[in-house]
Image (cartoon, rainbow over all chains, first blue to last red; front, side):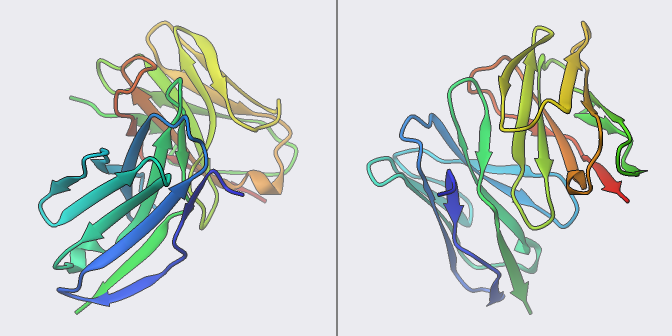
Length: 109
Length: 113
């Protein structure tokens, strides 16, 4: 079993759609949680951290359920520029990041 | 404020050769981590350097080694290259080894023929 597992993609959605990504992790000692965005052949960039209380940044909402070891990302009112691969990431003690395999999102006009 | 810089951007090698990749951390950062990202996969942690020592290591063979210099820059060395070593190699820097965010460089794309 992979340490971080994400929904298989790709997700193909029209502009304006709401899309949800799910992620589970196996290490109960994981300390921090993130969503990164990676454009084709580019480096991953931090999209947002994820907190147990849930957090929102504009059209993006992230949720964490430590009991279920589950992380989610909701994107509302999708834009063409949201097209990218979304990586679920957990950080374990010492700072090591563990990435999911990524879910590709394609937003169409 | 310079971000994380990596060199070279692209590299082509043949099986059995050796390669050295370089990384300069973001200004103010003292910790460097290296990741390997194969096509269609998420990045995999190779190792982390802090205070010129390897602090953590992922599940990579001894062919993968590294170094950190007093100015916090780092090198990743891979010996006896295999076809399967073809990947994007990413360097990330952060401040300390706690929970500070990691910032990634553009990566070095290594192709093994």
